[in-house]
Image (cartoon, rainbow over all chains, first blue to last red; front, side, top):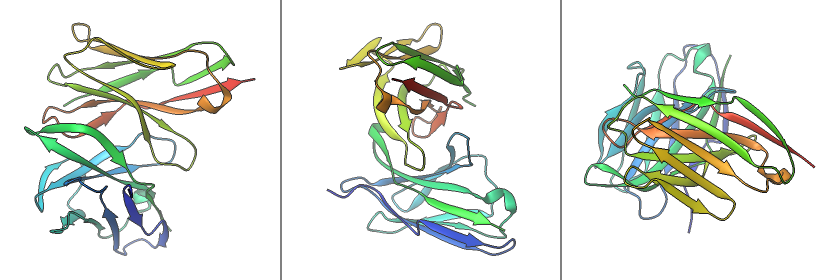
Length: 116
Length: 112
């Protein structure tokens, strides 16, 4: 059973460019969340997608946007990249039940973004 | 919003000793408290979790306790081994019940 898969694993961009990161959730999971983890810091919640809609959003600017497809996979887009966007971007999948997390939030290995 | 504080930030123990990491949270609506282990360059992996209707949970050498009144929860690792060395994060569910708010992490070093 494949876990959460993310691509690309590493990428380098320059300031002002745009980036798209991709995520396939664990089999059977219908909810995808994205987290940003700067070096040496804790993961921080960006947003969550369920039924192809952004269900919840953390404290991130509109430059961060996303999408969920009918097969539950998801994309994270970041526009007008800043140096401070350099981080490990983690995708996590889960199930929701009664509006709450049902079971484990399962993380992928992440996409390491470097902005020069 | 929810705020999670974690202590200590670093912890060094000898192999075979116990390790305890403590977290406090601010939002009384939080109902899910997982602990993640993250090795260098790897994804966070769930090691144990507890829900608000339970006071304690154990899985072999790992246990978690939750005190809802005091809004704190703790991770206990007994008989530590060098492979336990990693960064450990506590987390609490936010008010909506679906996003996790993480503590700043504890770097555990187990020396043999």
